[in-house]
Image (cartoon, rainbow over all chains, first blue to last red; front, top):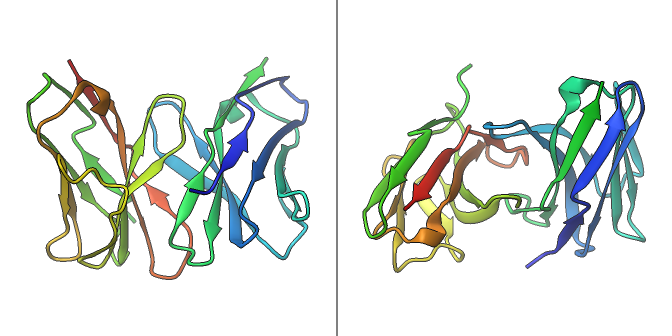
Length: 111
Length: 113
């Protein structure tokens, strides 16, 4: 199947920026997504980017896509303790009812 | 608007026992998914429904897992018999047809002893 890779952990201080990275293998990705999962909860869509875009900004969130390197990143500005969660990168392939998720990056925000 | 509702939230059973999970998707969402999430992993698709039709069940272990979505609304996922390795969170998600955004329920956490 499709391979979506993420680093496992990231620790930052409150007020700093966080950058979570993701690489994927399938060049036919249609959309790329970032989901957030808080303890004991399901996944919640944060933002997504169409594969022909380079960047998308949504308030404190900035998504960068390097399609040549198949690299996706999520930057969270002014990170807050409430941002502590697991962040999943996901891609949808051609038929965008199929989604492939990474293993998640656990973000720890220290006060 | 109510989100995706799953029950039970937690289930503890002994191995070889059966278990069933229920999911009620968001009203009007034609596409329903069951995902398996192991500890420290991302969700992996078990089965996808378009209305009442299972359009992708290639990853469902059919010797012990079954699912149904009889009227194209709520769905049930069953495991019989359960094995120790089935301990995981079972997530249900839905999406409006052709939309591309998944809405997840809170999941059903299964522990098999």
